[in-house]
Image (tube, rainbow, N blue to C red; front, side, top):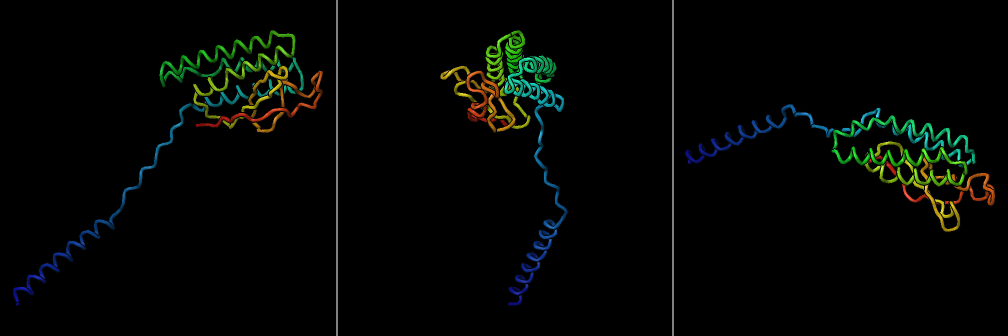
Length: 204
């Protein structure tokens, strides 16, 4: 009987020691949790150059709303200048195909913007503006992995006639149509808000 009690006492002591050591280990200082690294794909200067580029684009769009061809050409020249200032060399850190895609896309955008500046007809200028938009969205923005403010792709179903639609980009979901504008020869300002938001572009 005494031997049994001795064995039980020894077992209880062993359990108590084990429990004490376990609690001590758990109550020790805990290592801080590692937070996930949030790395930006592009440099600040790269994203700033894209923002400045789009400010010039929006100035072109606003000039067409006012049917101001002189302002549209001046803003397009500024747009071309900003296009050439994009530091695309940093895209080489990704893959050669990304760099080449962006380089080709910029070349296409520049060609249509340069054509716009040479036009005398506001309708032809607007057609080149439409082509600039098509080159930017989605090809250019997808290739660079756009990280800027939200943009909206908007559409006029009758930009160049009843069955000739065209798109433009805006920083607002409000429809202010650059193809029909405030001073259209046929519709005057009655079609200024004609159109709809087709899509949106947000940083990924």
